[in-house]
Image 1 (cartoon, rainbow, N blue to C red):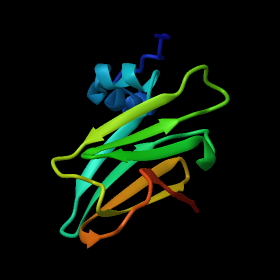
Image 2: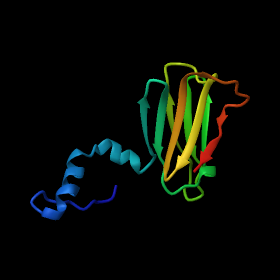
Image 3: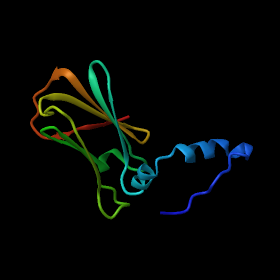
Length: 129
């Protein structure tokens, strides 16, 4: 892991950098070098999975489901091997309506709680905006 610039709280311009360093999770920061960040949110009508995927094109990303497992894989030509993250949910995904949108380095996957669909394959189409 490379060395990062250390800021001191006494430096007026370095306060924001120091606060970021103070609250930064070292385990998550270490993972950022090898994979990508994923967050899960819930609203009253859907589950939202957001993945921070910078510097790739939408066609380099695949989203697949298998029972209760949703996998996000990046097949970038810049990287030697693909990066993958999986999210396991407490319910099967096969019959759920799932939409995926990739915009400004953020992949947003919305899983409807009530709305059902019939799916022929396990791959989710990613919309680019």
